[in-house]
Length: 154
Image (cartoon, rainbow, N blue to C red; front, side, top):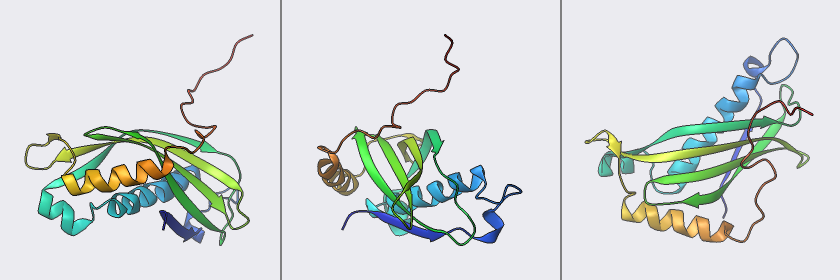
């Protein structure tokens, strides 16, 4: 089965505008990223065994629709690319109706905890990551991927 992270917007995530606060979208994406890292074989026991973890290097969030208190959502992950130490990951948040409500693009890096620096993925993790990547290889690049922020001048 493909990766999915499911959750419901709790009341404490709702701001003065009556919808999910922008920081909470990022909290949800962060929790989904942690679940994805577990999914590719770096759960807590494996991180301890390999003395290896993942750090987030960069993120870009797009807010497309409001989410209200009690609304359920699902986050899916697409591996856009990876190399020996990094994963270019794209997360999509959909509401219960299946509408895309937010996206997060991120770059993750594998880190040897003993050395405190970037290091190649453990073999078992790399194999699982490659299997996920191969499933996504023919998928269309998400419209929000690779975006930059700036004011367009005419």
